[in-house]
Image (cartoon, rainbow, N blue to C red; front, side, top):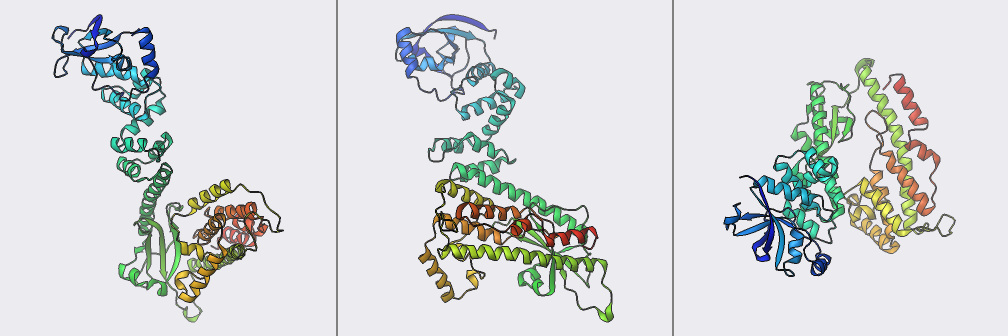
Length: 486
């Protein structure tokens, strides 16, 4: 049908909003109504003639007219004026109609994010490219891609979260979801998140899961190529490997660094080597351990192989590292005990003088540090954070002693967060199987800084040096590495 344009006036009851208009929320019309009441309709509406079924027809067959451009003017004025100045266009295809509405609406600043997203997707569906959308709407290419990703989310869930004032969904949260490639994962997190802030945590957890599984597959492939076998389930279930096998290597997932070739003995009948996959409660692998059958005494002074010599040297140096870290861990446990016994009180320095602290900012900082380091923590872990025994290994009477102490001490929120941060950090090694720092020493440095800022509790420089890879122990390791003894 050839396009034709006619300018005229139509009664308000002959006009309807176009059902495919991307703009669903017309916003606050109060000021526009005042203007129309004072000045009337100053600009023509653009409309198309349709029949009773909503199909495009010639003017002489029209039952009513759909508004393409000017929906806000029509809505604001329909109870004020009887007729509207219009420009009638005949012969527009469905694609052309949508294109006109989209281009006119996408440039408006008061569109919601959802409306923009759906509008861009409709333009894409009509055959426009991203570059076309950028040119016609004035939005940056990055923004267009962001909105198109939003358009892929479940519409009902998205609308529900935006309308939930307590949830406080932001555009930044939706950008966080884009870090996940799988649309099902994005929608699942958007649906399950209980607050805006939880989206980032759930995304990080999912990424860790994906990366852990990918890293696990790489480690297993390298191990099996090196001739290492998967530990039999019967051995793993019975824990018999603890008695007869030695843990020679661990791969922490997903951040472990892998060499191109593993220097591990091939598993044999006489001396089997197995790998064991450690998984969390959700079945996600977090570590792969390698076990080798323990050596028996060598007959008649037989010499050790070069591999055995290096392994024993690593074991000796690892023991020195463990002793250095144990000294720091004991000191941190003693600090918790001192705080519990009220020898040190949050906000008071070691000399007893008050220390000025912003409690709200301090709580936020501590919780940020804590949530970076751990995700599951029980009250029992907190209460027994300063003991060397675990609460599971204690008799009921012994446990009750510590419960009573906790109730009596009534540690503040800041104290409790500090205990949790320390306790969770104590269970982590700061070196990998090759005796190189793995980055976890940063957790200790954070604790040292917090203890200094909050309690005025100075930590010895030797502790900081140790966590930064300095000192006699690390020097001995470096010398052994240069001499190729490990």
